[in-house]
Image (cartoon, rainbow, N blue to C red; front, side, top):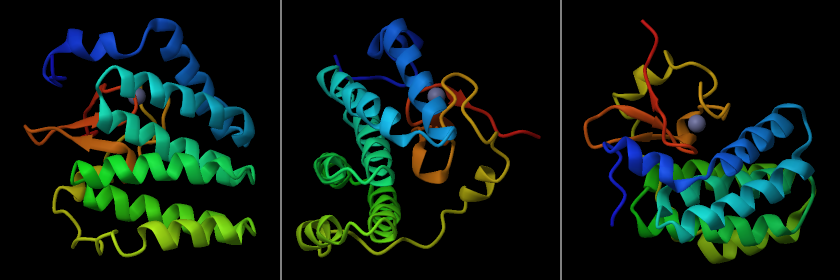
Length: 181
Ligand SMILES: [Zn+2]
């Protein structure tokens, strides 16, 4: 059955409670500057969501894994980035793909991982769309809480998903996010 974001039971079934705790743990490691501990957890949970037929959320977690591996100078960043970008492009998440690509290649360059950055540029450089003009809905993003109230993920624009109804949900756990007044 396809994932229906308006169905709260579908949201809960994607990650088991123990996996949900792993996600909180990984976000905690990342916030506390321990990307090497966070990265493999994100990678594992991305696979879980992929098997649960939730490719967009899997892409968000593969992206997070790639950035965390890059921050810990681990070449596994390339594998995770490849998985994330392939999914994002497949599902027309152009904005998310281009923001992630820019963040990650910047991070790899900063960490001296030149060959990893070159590999990604060679494979995806031509496929990444130019960033679209800023979405008018993006104004709402400045009024979001900085972290997801459920899983603790940082709610930067690239990690928030717009639903069909124009509301926002956490790109990691699917919790609906309301802008503060
Ligand atoms: Zn969340």
